Length: 189
Image 1 (cartoon, rainbow, N blue to C red):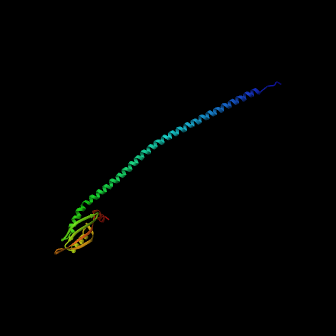
Image 2 (cartoon, rainbow, N blue to C red):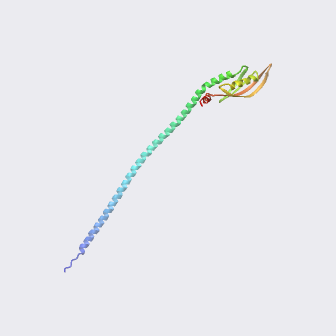
Image 3 (cartoon, rainbow, N blue to C red):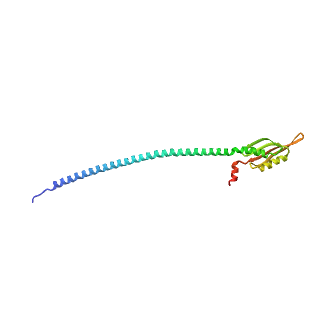
């Protein structure tokens, strides 16, 4: 029988398989590298896109912060204006109080009583004067007590001074003025 040598054919097949295997490995490495590079590029693109969105959001947030600061400034200005308006309204309501005060002092002043000084601090009024007698000072206090614009009369000092044949009573009297706002509060429960 003739002898056939199959080794070179097998050797060629082995070399071909080895070459195909190495080609497949190199191809797989290349494809893997390309996929990794494509993934890296995709992630970078997504990162840039997200950074762009973040920048847009940051600018919008900065604009909103400026608008909020402007709104707070406007609210503070509004509060100051409202406070000024309230003060102006109080002054407007208090304008006739001076007229009422002087009118009421004249009406409550009995005959024989003369005022030498009037001082006012807030709603508290201090009267200095002289009267023909201490009875006239008592009448003044009763008139103040029954007044609709004055209240809480309080006598601080009464001194009797001889002025020749006449005797005068020097006095210091305190009272409170009823403001129009207090009167409105009493009327409107």
